[in-house]
Image (cartoon, rainbow, N blue to C red; front, top):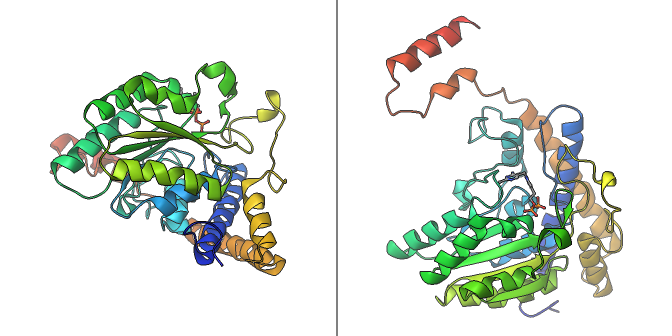
Length: 338
Ligand SMILES: Cc1ncc(C[n+]2csc(CCOP(=O)(O)OP(=O)(O)O)c2C)c(N)n1
């Protein structure tokens, strides 16, 4: 029995497991932040389904410019939980050597570009990346994710314009979670986000980003369009940010939560209910999945916390091919001060 279109039961189970892993990881990171183990976090809870759907539709060779709230997308694309913790901790196994804020990942092995902090600033880079791909005759498309607030930045508009003018293979995906920190989307923009591309000749579509099946169905047309070389496409995935903007934020000051972890509208619960109804899983499977996810993230954090921190003197690495005499001197001073 197939759940929808060409989504097999096996794919649905993997998607569900990754969504649960992402949620469990998110909760673990928040708790670790509260204990002073991790400095900062931008939770991804509530946005898992659209992220899983993107991960399912993307090919290996596609280059993804993710934003800071894409935990489920990383897991669906195969990034190990431990590598995520390495970055969050900034330990000596962190690929970025502890030089970036937590959540600003750079999983190049999985064809992700580096997450950037200034809202919307990664969007124009996708135009150059897609141009380079075409110039170098490389396979694949460029996918970029961002929030609703980012669609009011000038970077978003410049990117859409140039992607369209050069007919580039960029799939723009807005994860509209209803808020830009405390600013509700209704006060932030007057336009329907998926229509913002029309000013640049880019087709757009709104999808239910809280529903895996709807997200996959909606994304199909967008992926097909971009892959066929017709040019860029804009998807607005309507989703909901469960919880705060970041660990530095208190959403109780500006809103009443409409969806909470585990409530009926929770996207993970919705997929769970669908799979239960269709007899794809039973309650035992659901319970086991949650227990296994908890064991996996608990073990991964324990292990990664034992990895020593990045050496402070590594700040002198990677600056020049050969260190300058000033750097050598500063490194000696730093070592002597230990
Ligand atoms: C250029 C810039 N202005 C302000 C900020 C502070 N800031 C960080 S995230 C954020 C909200 C972004 O909202 P949205 O694009 O909707 O994404 P979300 O965080 O809701 O997923 C703001 C204003 C920033 N990082 N960069």
